[in-house]
Image (tube, rainbow, N blue to C red; front, side):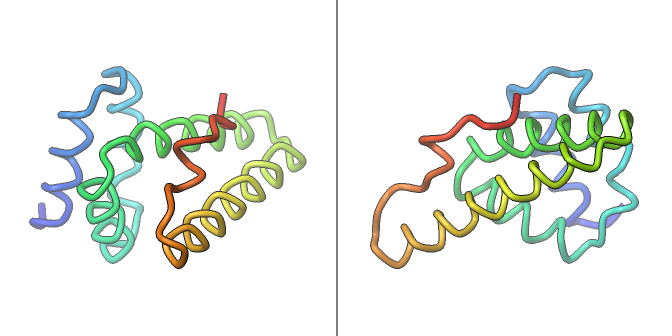
Length: 106
């Protein structure tokens, strides 16, 4: 396994998310482009709370795919876009991210 994948695995397994959720994430790890994993590693190192947000989003996506629910899938992506846009705006303004203020992935 590459250093980037090893680091991602370490971040996930050392996180406070449930072991079952860790295993679910790690199962799909080989299908994620290494460049994307490198970006996630940087995000998770900068803000470890983002591992929990990633897990919530991941579980929501799995549920939407399993249920073949296009509406739920679109809602998830819209919420993620709003969060990313909020983070970008806060970075420009020097404020806290909206991710800390929102808990939309249940």
